[in-house]
Image (tube, helix red, strand yellow):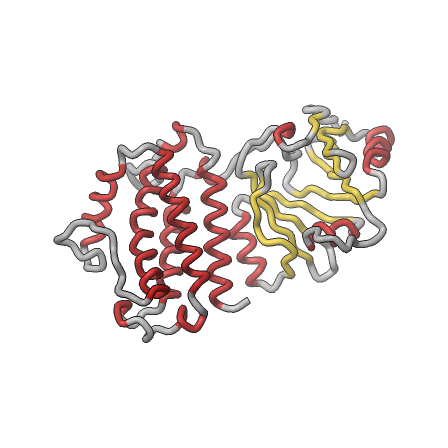
Length: 319
């Protein structure tokens, strides 16, 4: 992965993380303020979108070969001058605070998409060359992308903790470290484990997956195939189907966990993706060939919304 691909992958991951959060917040949560000020989450999103317009203007200038055409803000202020950002931030807050959330969210979403699309059009050489664009005063376009990422990350870390993670997702079984065991016949295996070892079936997903609980902990029974499929199934799914053992681990921030694992040299099967059942997950392989799925609950989703069948909500006492 070259530098351009690495930066854009981080931005894409950041977008998915923010979008997964924002789409599941209600009006009360959107009105919740950051840890260090009076801005609501809606105010933060409007603020991020407003500043991103300047970054988009720079990328458009590079793609279309013209001087940046910045949005019209306060005429007497240079946004890049010392002391100006505080006055501009106050102006942005007053200008957008009464905008409806639907408008603020759509502006932010469209702006992020536009930013990513422009980044894709710029070659890595153009992105890293600090002398190519005189109006950047010796800085590279990569610095523009990274600064935008850092700006979103700065505000992400200031969000109220109860907004950045969901404490309970009805689609997930209890437990932090959850073994995944593969069998040729999931239904027969689940029935045997319940009858013989005293597990209780919690959730059934067709005939290929089942969640079993025991004493507040869980195990997931998954379908095992004799050989890998030749279709276009995701690499993580194909390899996982051949494994006898795998593990799922709940983490508080899956994107940060992914970045650390990737930098440490882990073989990544699937980068972070937000799933329809309310989990954001990535998969990796350890040196022994074992598949690990790391998961963060980003929404509380009822199993029936995506095809799961809740069998029981209870837990067997382990005696």
